[in-house]
Length: 110
Length: 82
Image 1 (cartoon, rainbow over the protein chains, first blue to last red):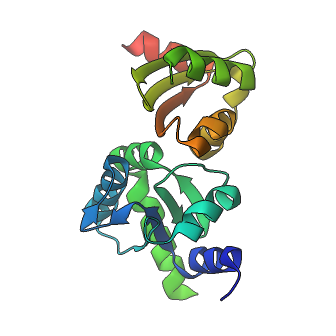
Image 2 (cartoon, rainbow over the protein chains, first blue to last red):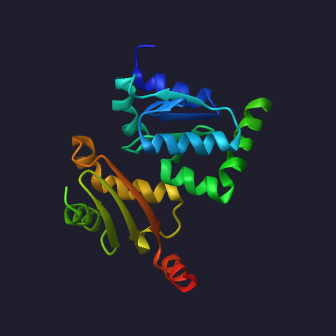
C-alpha cells in the first residue's frame, strides 16, 4: 500500500489490540514501551505490535492521526486507549483486562 | 528543558489549571489539575495536555512526559483520602 495513512488505519482496523512501540515485546527499546508490554502480557491477551523504530514513516505519521505525540500508543477495538501511564492505570484497576477481553470477543463474533 | 518552561507551556495552553512538574533534562512527570478536564476520559485529558507541548516533543527537547490529570473535585478527594 502506497499511502502510509491508509496503512496505519488498516492496521488499527484489522487488529483488535495493537501496540505501537519502540522495539519489540521481547526487547523493548524504552522503559515506557516495556511497561505497556508487561501490562498487556499480564492480561494474557494476544496483541499485535509495530516497532516504530523500524518504521520511521509510521513513527512520523501516526501522531497526527491519533492526536498523541509520543510512543507507545495502544489501540483497542480501533480506538486509542493511551500511552504507558493510562495503560498502567487501567492495568492496575483491572479495566485493561475487561477492555481486551471485549475487543477480542468482538473480533471472534465479527 | 527546564521545569518552569514545561509548566509555562501547559499553563498557557490550558488557562486556569494548576501544574506540578518534576524531573529534569528531557523527561518529566507532571500532575495537572483543572476544571477543563471535567467530563473527559483519560485519553482526552492527556491529549489536551500533550497538545500544549507538541513543539518540544517534536524537536526532541522534550522526550517524554508522564502525567496524572485530575479535576479539582477529584484532586480534593485524593487529598482527603491521603
